[in-house]
Every structure is written in structure tokens, then in C-alpha cells.
Amino acid sequence: MNSESKVSQPANSSFTMDDFAKALEVHDYQFQKGQVVHGKVFQLDSNGAYVDIGGKSSAFLPRDEASLRAVTDLSEVLPLQEELEFLIIRDQDAEGQVTLSRKQLEIQQIWERLTQMQEAGQTVQARVTGVNKGGVTVDLLSLRGFIPRSHLADRDNLEALRGQNLTVSFLEINRSNNKLILSQRLATRSSNFSLLELNQLVEGKVTGVKPFGVFVDLDGLSALLHIKQVSQKFIESLEKVFQVGQTVKAVIIDLDEGKGRVTLSTRILENFPGEILDNFDEVMASAEARANRAINKPAE
View 1: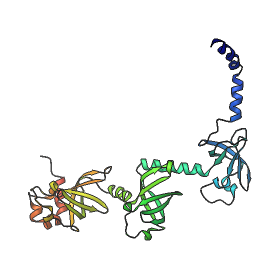
View 2: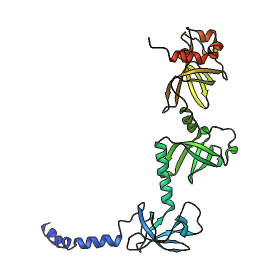
View 3: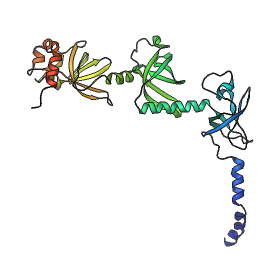
């Protein structure tokens, strides 16, 4: 074992740091696929552009990787000798030349921008480009997105949406598999939420009556009037008080935009327990004055 190590040692020491540096230089390891680099276009031809990115060999940008938009004159998007950013989309070939793209860099920047918008809870405009059974496809900043039918405001006539611009929120953004799922209903809900506040008197239509409470539509936003918030008096059956399609006024007592929850109360409008059961129309007719009185009532 010792004699072997003595033989191998001189061989190792003969490979100097200079040799190592030269080996690195030959392979241009600093340029790798997925890396963003700066460079200057120095030559254009019918196939694309040659770019100086500081390597041993010039880099090449194919014509169809010049821009996201259709380009007839490459010099419009790739001006000569102007420093630009590029994305390396193919590692170097046998001659040490890497392949670049401006188009893929633009796409990457759009994904990053959309992710930031999602994190900030922002909405965005998307144009409907296609319709299928499950929903609609849209163009969003040149990326292809999808809105499921269940997340459209109008689910009955999808064909009428073709060509329209819709305000949407983000459901899922996944760059690795180009998944961009959007929601028009969430965007509407978010917009409506900004118009609501605690202790506000609102008016809506009853969309459902359940044993535990009543669902009320507030311009596309679903709110819950819990059975305990209907009256100060115990209620055996909500179906004796409310019907689907009925208009109801109530006060907002809880708002949770994160969970999309709005909680209402008509109990707060009563002058005495059970008044809303005995005289529903009168309570509704004078709801504004009753709400003001209840909200401004000094704490006991």
C-alpha cells in the first residue's frame, strides 16, 4: 500500500493550479443552461444572431428565440453592440458555443411577475382565446392560462366569452409544468370584499336556507346569516321565516377575506326578541335607522 501511494504522489503534484485553470477555461464551466448572462450582439443573419458574452466562443441566438412577439426585422429587438440580457437555453456544443434566448427570458420574467402578483393578492386582465367543456383558455401577458367553468361568473354561455377581457385572480401558478389556473369568481369576490366593512348594513337575496342558517348573495359574494343571528328569540325552523329569492337586509358582524367569509346579523335590528318573526317587513323597512341605533348604542 505504501509503495503505491509513493508512486501516485508525484503524479498528483505534477497537476498544477495552472493546469486546473486551463482545464476550466477549455470547458467554460461558468456558462450553464438556465443562467442569465449579459452580452452584445455583433452579427445578424437570416438564422439568428451571434452574441459576445465574454466566452472563448461567441454564443448563438436562433431567430425564433429573439422575442415573444412576432419579429420581421431582428435589428428591432436585437440592436448591434447594445448590452442585453440573455438566457442560456442549451449548454455549449463541441465548439464551446452556447445557445441563447431572449424569448425564454421574457417568459421567465412574466412567470416571476405573475407569482409576485399572486403573493400580493392582485388581479389581472386576461383575454379569452378558446372554449372547451371544462372552461375557457385565456391569453395572459402572452402566456396560456385556463379558467375552470366553476370559476367563471357566467357558466352557461361560454362561447359568448370568446374575445372578452376578464378580470381574474390566481388559483395556481406552476412554472415547471406551465400550469396557470385562474379564477374570475375569486377576483369578483376580492373586488366586492373591498366595498364591505364591519357594522355595514347590506342588502342581498336569499340563495339557500339550511337548518343552521341562511345564505345571502351580496353582488356575487355569498354571506351567511347564522340561525343564532336571525333573532334574539329561539327559532325552530328558518324555512318559516325565509324563502329562496327573498330580499333581506342585515348588518355585517364578521369579515374574513382570507377565508372568503361574511357573517350577517338581523338579530341586531330587533327592538325586542322575536320582532323579526312577528313583523319581518317592518324590521326590513326601517333597517337603516335600526342599524344606526344599534351600532351607535353605548356599551352597557
